[in-house]
Structures are given as structure tokens and as C-alpha cells.
Length: 179
Length: 383
Image 1: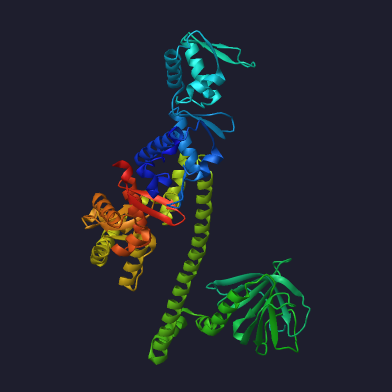
Image 2 (image 1 turned 60 degrees about the horizontal axis):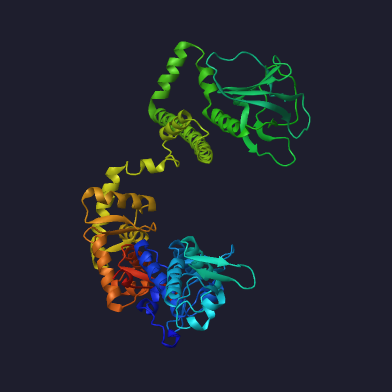
């Protein structure tokens, strides 16, 4: 999709103090806000659904080689904590080494998928999960290549709203039927 | 030994000058004696020695027989300090324990010390020759005559002067005796008060209120400042500190005005003492005096940065204006370190850092802490 066009870094990314967690509380709030937006935007632009902390710390996201600045491990943790508090990420393990990035919240995904199903007349038709995220019909949809776990969260949302029914989960042909 | 006589009651005016226990009397170089252990009492006329085992067995050595004396300090091998007395040929008629002797000296051995004092007083008593007076004054008329005789002529004046001198000397000696005792006691008191205040500090709460108060009042009455509650007394010598504050204002006002409106406390301390040259102030007094600056309407004031650094600054240089000034500097350079600010304002790096931190605290600048050091930028996050 849009991966070809270069990611447009916010101005903060070129502002050296951005890479030092600020001491003054009100300043720090603004800074974390900016970081949160950057992480989400970056993930959305690059279609990243989950990240490893170690991986993230060394990625260009937290490293500005042009400025020779990088956010310290403590800084990264502070930012992630802030994101977790805002429910924009979720750690997938107890060791807190991997996390999902919800650049769209699961219910937003759910709506998008249901919309797609309605538009393409897939209601009341069983679909495999593979078809939704990797099928030929969805190559132009933003949820193409969506991670399975996030897809499951979105579908769980729909099931709760009685707009979908999960079938055969855990089996060979996992599927879903939109109602 | 033949100079010693058995005791007979002396004159009624006989006054005890000094006494020492565990004294032995030895003759010449002999190592043995019948008078091994007793109490030696010194009067103006004689030494009376009383045997410890038999107090009625008493010997007398009259001062009139003494030619000279010397003191020997306790050596490693001797039993104690001793006084060696050289004596004249004996008077006839006195009844003593020994009738003849080949020696002209006897030794008084002080096994338990006290020879210094005894020797001094003994020498003194022998020199004053009071026995001559009392023996010549056997009748009342004679004593009057002798006192008349004493008060006339050059010799009389001389004697009176000598007596006065002696008296003064004694008074002074006594006074200083008291003094040295006081000093010793004071040193003990200080040690005690220190140890107690340590205890008070270490077991705060275990000691009841009453005890603490009682202890503090003792210390106060001794003039020992209480290290535990020193803070409560800060500012109590207000008169003194206020005049010091005045002095600090006079000395430092110009300097501070010319150098960024701020001066760290150590520098204040150095400058004020340099200005005084003599009669230097303690750091504590300087600090208290700086605390008193606010009470005397001085153009200076003591300011404490959040980090605890204390400075004396111009009152006109309020926090807002210094912060604004700092921001202006940082904005001009786009990014600034404490060193650069210090150089530009002519203040110390520590003060510059404090200023930057204060400006950061008010959200006007923000930090960039990297391997390049701590730099400050205008706070664009808040725009």
C-alpha cells in the first residue's frame, strides 16, 4: 500500500530534547503525547501490528541517526507505559517483551471488516480467517495482512454485537460467518 | 637519725600546711629503717611523722635543723619520690630514738606520691623561718616588741613587701588551681554532653519528653549549644547576625550587582573573610547572617534552589526575571549548556546550572541529555 511513500517524521523527531525524557512534568506530558502519536503513526504507516521491545529500541523509531540521538531504554519504557495507559498498546507476555500496537482499536477494525463483508455480500457466508487477511478480495483493504490475534479481537467484538459467528476455532479451517 | 626527736605538743599556733601518707624516713644511704610507713604532717615549725601501725609513736624534725633539701623524682627502681634533707648537728637536750648517727642527711620517701606539693611547702616553711619569731615571742610583751621591730626600718618594709608578695602569689596560685580544676571539669562536661546528645539523637523517641527538656536545660546552663536542636536557636542571636548581615551587604552588594546578581554561599564566606582579614567568621555565622539579610531591609537576600544550593542574590533579581533572562540567552543560542551561560553572565557553572534548572522547572526550556552533555533548548513542546 502506502509503504512506498516515505514516512513523514514529525518535527519533534528532529528536535534533540525529544530523545531525553523531560523532567518538568507539564513538558513531559506534551513530550509523551508526541511520542505516542509518533509510535502509532509509524506503526500504521509501516503496517506494524506487534513489536518486540529490544527490536523497537534499536529501530529507527527510537533512534535518530542524523541527530545521533536515541531514546534510552528507560525512555522507551516510559513511552510504552504511557501508551499502555492510553490503551494504545497491549503487552502479549508477562515478561513485557512484546506488545501489540493498536493503531486502530479492535472495534474500529471490527467495523471496517463488517463494512467490507456487507459491501462484498459475504453476509451469511462462511469465510476462513485466511481469506479475510490474506485473501485476494482484501488486498486493497487496510486490514490485509492484519495479525491473527488482532483479527480475533475484532471478530470477538463483532460476535459480542451478534454480527458475526466464529466457527471451528482452533481447528483446521477456522472460519467466521457474518450475520 | 639523731636529729629526730620524740613528739611533744607544739605551740598552739601550729598550723597544718600539708600532709602525706605512706611516708618512710630513711637515714643517709641506708635502705632500712625503723620508720617504714607513717603519715608526715608539715607545719610552719616542723615535720611531725606518725607511725601508721602505732599512731602514738611520733617523731619530730624541726625546721631549724634544716640546711638544704632537694627533691628526687620517682625512678624506675626506687619505691617512690623522695625528699633528701641535709641537717645541722643536733641540738642537745632533745630526746630522740637514736642518739648518734654518722649521716647528716635523711630521706623522706613518699610511696604514694605527694612529694611535689610537700617539697614545695616544706621549702617555703623553712625559708620563712617562723619558728624564730614564735620562739622569740614567748611572752606577750616580747611579741609586741618583735612586731614593732618588724615594722620599722628598711628591713621591715622589705619584709612587708615580701609578705605581700607571698600573699599575692598564694592567692594567684589558689585561683589558678581552681581554674585548672574548672578546665578539667569543663572538658569532662563537654565529653558527657556530647555522648548524651549522641544518645538522644540515636534513640529519638525512647527518651521521654521531660528527660530531653531537662537535659537541654543543663546544656544551656553550661553554655554548651545543643547540637540536637541547633536549628531552633538559629536566629536567636539576631542582634549579632543582623549587624553581620549589614556588613555582608556593604561588602558584597557591588560585587553581586556586577556579577550576574547572584553569589553562591561559599563565595560569600570567602569574600567576607577576605574583607575582614582578621577576626574571621565561621561558616555557620555567615549562613545565619545571610538568613538575617531579609530582616534588615538589605538589597540582598538568601535564596535556596530546589536542589539545596544556597545563594545570596539581589532582591531585584527575582526568580521570574532571572528565568526570563535565562530563556532569552538559550533562545539566542538555540541551545545552551551551563558552561556557556556561566561564561556569558560571569557566574559560576553551578549557579548557571541552577538557573537553567529553574527555567526548565517553569517549562520555558527543555533538556537534551546525551553523550554530548546536558544541553538546554527553548521548550518547543509547549508551543
